[in-house]
Amino acid sequence: MTRLVSSRRPLPARRPQVSVDLVFGGNLYTLSIGGDGATPEPLEVFVSTWSKAGTSLQDAVRDAAIMISLAIQHGCPIETMRRALTRDHEGKPASVIGAVVEAMATMQGQQQEATSP
Image 1 (tube, rainbow, N blue to C red):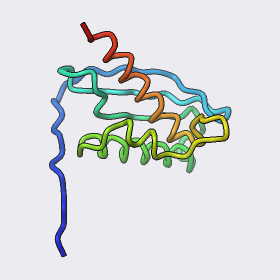
Image 2: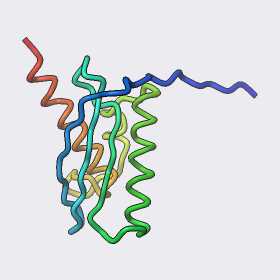
Image 3: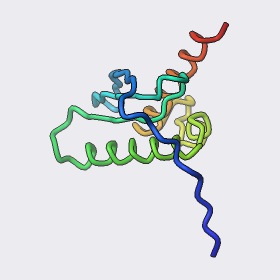
């Protein structure tokens, strides 16, 4: 069996990070989105929820953030993830995970516009 693995993009030990709040499904989340500082591309995300510590919701969003970060660092574009995740009948993210990826895609687009000549 052949195993295909892309190399992971290494991150510097110290890197810029932006924190934003997100409300989804009546719950408040804080996203900490970081990159390498050389490009406007987000390369990692940490998600905290203001729900009770140790809940399955808190564990699920933390694990999802790790998976999103690893996917990006292994070369999966944020836009590819955004298009792949479930949307509701209005075209909005159907899950908090989709909302996190949507927020990252929006932030990436805003940063690219700000750095374009």
